[in-house]
Every structure is written in structure tokens, then in C-alpha cells.
Length: 78
Image (cartoon, rainbow, N blue to C red):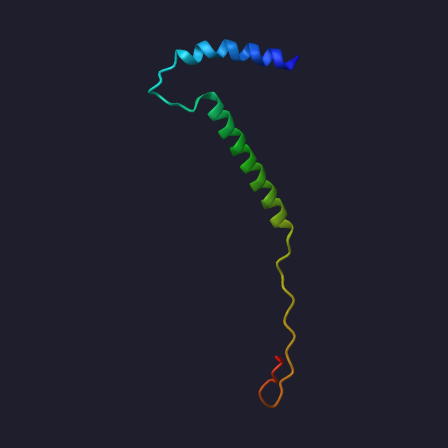
């Protein structure tokens, strides 16, 4: 029963929360774990992006010269 173990863990942590100073706010271990997971995710995304960007070929094909007409170009709008 996962419900019972979670309930028991919460009942054991409630007295610890009462001992904390109510005027002092700290991120605690949970804040550190969340920050560390986010940092690892950003690092993994940057590494993946770098790998994908190295595979891209940025060479463009040269433009073909347009044939010049004697006068102004004709309007294509209606």
C-alpha cells in the first residue's frame, strides 16, 4: 500500500516542521534537488543542440543570375 507509507512519512515529518523558525525561509534539500535536476536538463539540452548544430551544412548554393530585361520589370500584382 503506497498510500500508507506516504501517510506514515508525512506524520513523521510534521513534528520536524514545527521546530523550524517561522521567520526564516530556506529552499532546503528539495530546492537544491529541483535546481540540480534543472541544471542537468539544461546541460543535456545544450549538448544535444551542439551535436545537432554540428551536423548542419551551412553552405548555400550560389544564386543564379537573372536575365536582364531592357526596361523595368513587369508588375505581377493584380
